[in-house]
Length: 230
Image (cartoon, rainbow, N blue to C red):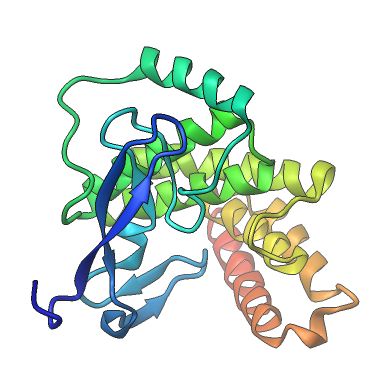
Protein backbone atom coordinates (compact mmCIF):
# COMPACT_ATOMS: atom_id res chain seq x y z
CA UNK A 1 0.00 0.00 0.00
CA UNK A 2 1.31 3.44 -0.90
CA UNK A 3 2.30 5.82 1.90
CA UNK A 4 0.16 8.41 0.12
CA UNK A 5 -2.92 6.45 1.15
CA UNK A 6 -4.46 8.13 4.23
CA UNK A 7 -5.55 4.72 5.52
CA UNK A 8 -3.28 2.03 6.89
CA UNK A 9 -3.83 -1.29 8.62
CA UNK A 10 -3.21 -1.58 12.35
CA UNK A 11 -2.96 -4.92 14.15
CA UNK A 12 -5.30 -5.81 17.01
CA UNK A 13 -5.86 -8.85 19.23
CA UNK A 14 -9.32 -9.43 20.65
CA UNK A 15 -9.22 -9.73 24.46
CA UNK A 16 -12.24 -12.05 24.37
CA UNK A 17 -11.58 -14.65 21.67
CA UNK A 18 -7.84 -13.88 21.14
CA UNK A 19 -8.27 -13.47 17.38
CA UNK A 20 -5.55 -11.37 15.71
CA UNK A 21 -6.80 -9.18 12.88
CA UNK A 22 -6.18 -5.92 11.06
CA UNK A 23 -8.40 -2.87 10.87
CA UNK A 24 -7.99 0.43 9.08
CA UNK A 25 -6.79 3.55 10.83
CA UNK A 26 -6.10 7.07 9.49
CA UNK A 27 -2.69 8.68 9.31
CA UNK A 28 -2.59 11.79 11.49
CA UNK A 29 -1.07 13.71 8.56
CA UNK A 30 -4.28 13.07 6.59
CA UNK A 31 -6.67 14.52 9.19
CA UNK A 32 -8.22 17.88 8.23
CA UNK A 33 -10.79 19.53 10.48
CA UNK A 34 -13.43 21.40 8.51
CA UNK A 35 -15.59 22.69 11.37
CA UNK A 36 -16.74 21.91 14.90
CA UNK A 37 -20.39 21.70 15.87
CA UNK A 38 -21.89 22.92 19.12
CA UNK A 39 -22.24 19.42 20.62
CA UNK A 40 -18.49 18.75 20.08
CA UNK A 41 -19.03 16.83 16.84
CA UNK A 42 -16.10 17.48 14.50
CA UNK A 43 -16.65 17.56 10.73
CA UNK A 44 -13.58 16.45 8.77
CA UNK A 45 -12.64 17.01 5.16
CA UNK A 46 -12.03 13.67 3.50
CA UNK A 47 -11.65 10.65 5.75
CA UNK A 48 -12.99 11.04 9.29
CA UNK A 49 -11.03 9.61 12.25
CA UNK A 50 -14.39 9.26 14.00
CA UNK A 51 -15.39 6.57 11.49
CA UNK A 52 -12.36 4.45 12.47
CA UNK A 53 -12.31 5.14 16.21
CA UNK A 54 -14.17 1.90 17.07
CA UNK A 55 -12.60 -1.51 16.48
CA UNK A 56 -14.80 -4.58 16.03
CA UNK A 57 -13.54 -8.15 16.31
CA UNK A 58 -14.57 -9.99 13.12
CA UNK A 59 -15.14 -13.23 15.03
CA UNK A 60 -16.96 -12.46 18.29
CA UNK A 61 -18.00 -8.83 17.62
CA UNK A 62 -16.38 -7.43 20.75
CA UNK A 63 -16.17 -3.68 20.04
CA UNK A 64 -14.26 -0.91 21.80
CA UNK A 65 -12.33 2.27 21.05
CA UNK A 66 -9.06 1.92 19.15
CA UNK A 67 -7.17 3.20 22.22
CA UNK A 68 -8.53 0.54 24.59
CA UNK A 69 -9.44 -2.42 22.36
CA UNK A 70 -6.27 -4.41 23.08
CA UNK A 71 -6.53 -3.92 26.86
CA UNK A 72 -6.73 -7.13 28.88
CA UNK A 73 -9.90 -7.80 30.82
CA UNK A 74 -10.38 -9.76 34.07
CA UNK A 75 -10.84 -13.49 33.49
CA UNK A 76 -14.36 -13.53 34.89
CA UNK A 77 -15.41 -10.64 32.67
CA UNK A 78 -13.88 -12.33 29.61
CA UNK A 79 -15.97 -15.47 30.22
CA UNK A 80 -19.17 -13.47 30.77
CA UNK A 81 -18.60 -11.35 27.67
CA UNK A 82 -17.74 -14.35 25.51
CA UNK A 83 -21.00 -16.02 26.52
CA UNK A 84 -23.11 -12.89 25.97
CA UNK A 85 -21.50 -11.97 22.65
CA UNK A 86 -21.93 -15.51 21.33
CA UNK A 87 -25.66 -15.34 22.07
CA UNK A 88 -25.97 -11.92 20.39
CA UNK A 89 -23.80 -12.54 17.34
CA UNK A 90 -25.59 -11.75 14.09
CA UNK A 91 -25.15 -13.48 10.75
CA UNK A 92 -23.90 -11.67 7.65
CA UNK A 93 -22.23 -8.75 9.39
CA UNK A 94 -20.31 -6.46 7.00
CA UNK A 95 -16.52 -6.22 7.04
CA UNK A 96 -15.75 -3.63 9.70
CA UNK A 97 -11.99 -3.80 9.12
CA UNK A 98 -11.98 -2.06 5.75
CA UNK A 99 -12.99 1.37 4.55
CA UNK A 100 -16.01 2.82 6.36
CA UNK A 101 -18.68 5.35 5.51
CA UNK A 102 -20.90 7.00 8.14
CA UNK A 103 -23.50 4.21 8.00
CA UNK A 104 -20.89 1.50 8.65
CA UNK A 105 -19.30 3.61 11.38
CA UNK A 106 -22.72 3.91 13.01
CA UNK A 107 -23.00 0.12 13.16
CA UNK A 108 -19.54 -0.06 14.77
CA UNK A 109 -20.57 2.46 17.41
CA UNK A 110 -23.79 0.56 18.10
CA UNK A 111 -21.75 -2.59 18.72
CA UNK A 112 -19.40 -0.61 21.00
CA UNK A 113 -22.41 0.66 22.97
CA UNK A 114 -23.62 -2.92 23.34
CA UNK A 115 -20.20 -4.10 24.51
CA UNK A 116 -19.93 -1.20 26.97
CA UNK A 117 -23.33 -2.04 28.44
CA UNK A 118 -22.30 -5.67 28.85
CA UNK A 119 -19.08 -4.54 30.54
CA UNK A 120 -21.06 -2.19 32.83
CA UNK A 121 -18.73 0.73 32.15
CA UNK A 122 -19.11 4.07 33.93
CA UNK A 123 -21.97 6.39 32.91
CA UNK A 124 -19.53 8.92 31.48
CA UNK A 125 -17.84 6.37 29.24
CA UNK A 126 -21.17 5.00 28.04
CA UNK A 127 -22.48 8.53 27.41
CA UNK A 128 -19.49 9.27 25.17
CA UNK A 129 -20.16 6.19 23.04
CA UNK A 130 -23.86 7.02 22.82
CA UNK A 131 -23.09 10.56 21.69
CA UNK A 132 -20.58 9.25 19.14
CA UNK A 133 -23.32 7.02 17.75
CA UNK A 134 -25.60 10.05 17.46
CA UNK A 135 -22.88 11.96 15.58
CA UNK A 136 -22.31 9.28 12.95
CA UNK A 137 -26.07 8.75 12.63
CA UNK A 138 -26.34 12.47 11.84
CA UNK A 139 -23.65 12.10 9.18
CA UNK A 140 -25.56 9.13 7.73
CA UNK A 141 -28.82 11.16 7.74
CA UNK A 142 -30.50 8.76 10.15
CA UNK A 143 -32.29 11.44 12.17
CA UNK A 144 -34.41 9.02 14.20
CA UNK A 145 -31.34 7.02 15.27
CA UNK A 146 -29.52 10.27 16.07
CA UNK A 147 -32.36 11.44 18.31
CA UNK A 148 -32.58 8.10 20.11
CA UNK A 149 -28.87 7.97 20.93
CA UNK A 150 -28.65 11.69 21.75
CA UNK A 151 -31.40 11.27 24.35
CA UNK A 152 -29.65 8.25 25.84
CA UNK A 153 -26.36 10.19 25.93
CA UNK A 154 -28.07 13.03 27.81
CA UNK A 155 -29.48 10.57 30.35
CA UNK A 156 -26.06 9.08 31.07
CA UNK A 157 -24.23 12.42 31.12
CA UNK A 158 -26.74 13.58 33.75
CA UNK A 159 -26.10 10.41 35.74
CA UNK A 160 -22.35 10.85 35.43
CA UNK A 161 -22.52 14.48 36.51
CA UNK A 162 -24.84 13.98 39.48
CA UNK A 163 -24.01 10.52 40.75
CA UNK A 164 -20.73 8.96 39.75
CA UNK A 165 -18.70 11.97 38.63
CA UNK A 166 -16.87 9.65 36.25
CA UNK A 167 -17.07 11.92 33.23
CA UNK A 168 -15.17 9.99 30.56
CA UNK A 169 -12.65 12.12 28.62
CA UNK A 170 -14.43 15.41 29.39
CA UNK A 171 -14.03 17.73 32.35
CA UNK A 172 -16.82 19.00 34.61
CA UNK A 173 -17.42 22.23 32.67
CA UNK A 174 -17.45 20.47 29.30
CA UNK A 175 -20.03 17.96 30.54
CA UNK A 176 -22.22 20.67 32.08
CA UNK A 177 -22.10 22.65 28.83
CA UNK A 178 -22.83 19.53 26.78
CA UNK A 179 -25.85 18.69 28.95
CA UNK A 180 -27.16 22.17 28.25
CA UNK A 181 -26.60 21.81 24.53
CA UNK A 182 -28.26 18.38 24.40
CA UNK A 183 -31.26 19.80 26.25
CA UNK A 184 -31.37 22.65 23.71
CA UNK A 185 -31.42 20.17 20.84
CA UNK A 186 -34.33 18.46 22.59
CA UNK A 187 -36.09 21.86 22.70
CA UNK A 188 -36.14 21.73 26.50
CA UNK A 189 -35.10 25.36 26.61
CA UNK A 190 -35.47 26.14 30.31
CA UNK A 191 -33.37 23.13 31.28
CA UNK A 192 -30.77 24.16 28.69
CA UNK A 193 -30.67 27.75 29.99
CA UNK A 194 -30.23 26.49 33.57
CA UNK A 195 -27.22 24.40 32.56
CA UNK A 196 -25.66 27.18 30.49
CA UNK A 197 -26.10 29.48 33.49
CA UNK A 198 -24.39 26.90 35.69
CA UNK A 199 -21.43 26.85 33.30
CA UNK A 200 -21.18 30.63 32.97
CA UNK A 201 -21.29 31.17 36.74
CA UNK A 202 -18.88 28.34 37.60
CA UNK A 203 -15.89 29.36 39.74
CA UNK A 204 -13.44 27.91 37.19
CA UNK A 205 -15.02 29.34 34.05
CA UNK A 206 -12.37 32.02 33.45
CA UNK A 207 -9.75 29.31 33.02
CA UNK A 208 -11.92 27.74 30.30
CA UNK A 209 -12.54 30.65 27.90
CA UNK A 210 -13.62 28.52 24.93
CA UNK A 211 -16.34 26.81 26.98
CA UNK A 212 -17.43 30.16 28.41
CA UNK A 213 -17.86 31.60 24.90
CA UNK A 214 -19.77 28.54 23.70
CA UNK A 215 -22.04 28.59 26.76
CA UNK A 216 -22.79 32.31 26.32
CA UNK A 217 -23.47 31.87 22.60
CA UNK A 218 -25.78 28.90 23.14
CA UNK A 219 -27.52 30.62 26.07
CA UNK A 220 -28.39 33.51 23.76
CA UNK A 221 -29.48 31.16 20.97
CA UNK A 222 -31.58 29.19 23.43
CA UNK A 223 -33.36 32.33 24.65
CA UNK A 224 -34.08 33.27 21.04
CA UNK A 225 -35.39 29.79 20.18
CA UNK A 226 -37.56 29.73 23.30
CA UNK A 227 -39.12 33.08 22.37
CA UNK A 228 -40.06 31.70 18.96
CA UNK A 229 -42.12 28.94 20.58
CA UNK A 230 -44.29 31.39 22.55
